[in-house]
Image 1 (cartoon, rainbow, N blue to C red):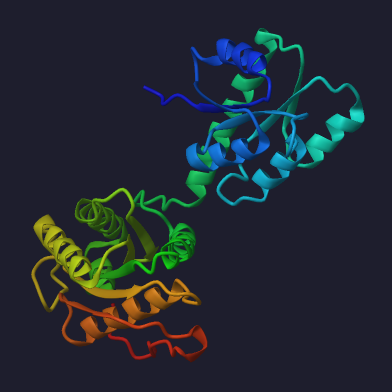
Image 2 (spheres, rainbow, N blue to C red):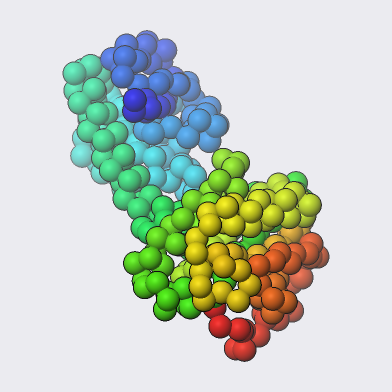
Length: 320
């Protein structure tokens, strides 16, 4: 069953809210605000799928609300339909220039309102599906590197406010080039997809993210996770991959597919870049491969300004 879209109705006249609510409540979840200030607060709280926004309100008017919402990264893609008694192309052009997608004039015609809302909700769903495809790895269904980097940026900014822990796990399939050479690339692709499923079973929280970093490498972002908890997840990843029992004649450490793992954990502090976690986890992954593979190496690191951090030298890595 498709989840019902949420509509935020903003109007300082309760009678107008009641009319629009009656027209839409059978198909959508409805929330409302009676002022511009309240609209911004509610929008940030519920993240609606569409906003019906009155233009003329005391205090912050609809134009200013629209401007504020379109400047908010979390709300910028939410479609806004202005509801107004204003007549004239100038007012309509002003609203469209600020990012609104449509106008509905008052008095509200329920049939027209339902049609406009239905059309824009469907368009938003299509845009959301395209956006999801753009940040999803087609082979594994995991997030791709673009989403990984965006998530790291968002989480470091969010967790910096509380100084909470953030952990990143890097995972590499051992001797994967030899696996491809032995069994062929189609079997190699199936191996990558199976390992991705194993990672999903180990990384269980809705707030965590698992991504295909590139080739046979994966990365996991674990917000609010300290070092011990991250190491527990890493051990579960390793166990889940071993349980797959994928034969690997080319491996020198096991008769089946294994993974090497690097873990990096730190408290989020002002000025820290998400790439610090990737670089530290990558360095630990490199160390685990140098130490013989099929193992986990991790550490909790302190804040280091990005300009002082030297990335690991990877020119002489052992063959993947």
